[in-house]
Length: 346
Image (cartoon, rainbow, N blue to C red; front, side, top):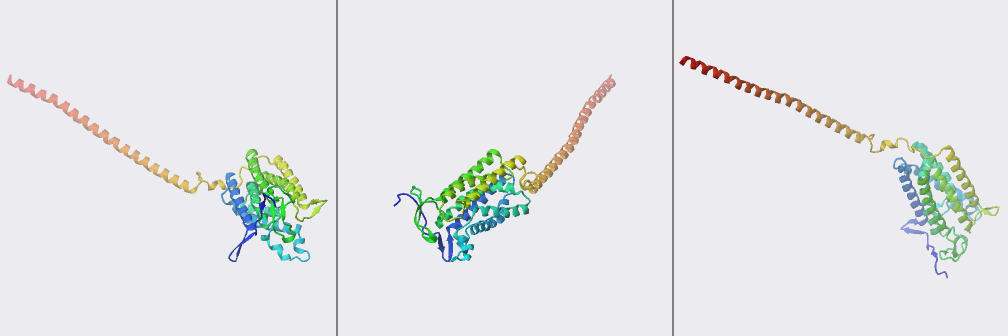
């Protein structure tokens, strides 16, 4: 008996009346929400409109789910089309089985359609959502834990995964939790992309290419540890060959893109600045015009008051001066009359 291990859930589905609540599906949904939330924050920080990432994800996510399922069914066709198998099971995506290679490839097609409809460059959008996709994969891998699948070789380390199911040829025992290894690796990849993007100002799809390259490195050694059935080419698992090929393509893209289009896009979404709260905002502009009109009217009233008061004051002063002159003129008249009276007496 192992003293320390990671227990597997007794079942991967709970029923709320007739409604099944599957752990695998919840992990995928949580991952999608995290990717959209973080992608939106990064997109707005780069000058895009809020909500654009979610609008394009409406295209990318369904395409990605179909692509991931297609890759799994094609590469493991014997699970659905061999003797004694039911091909209808190929559509039961809730039972597990999504290939990340197909999900990214066909998901990119859906994203391209969404970006084309919005008139924005796909590489810029991909850079914004790249770390979010890595975190989404980290959550999604816990769906394999609910289904007790995709584990590694037998081991006795304290963090060994205890498999209890014997369905589909499983042998109960203690195995390397490759789902956990890949989940932690994806978290590291997400933070790596965020750091590198801030440090080197990655643009034109290079942040997304870095995510792809870094993920492939981890997937290669994790895939090597797995013991589930898989096709081999020259003694190497098919997914290992895929990881090597995709890694080389991602690195090549980073090198060529940095030479051809260095730096980062200045504008990622045309017209996004018009929706800000600056002078171009119609509401603020109206308020400014009203304020200007009020100020102008106030200035006019002040000017009118000043002009009308000045003549009045001058008239008043003029009247005072005339009264003073009249008083001064009355004194000589009185002196003349006094002199005449004196002469008569003499």
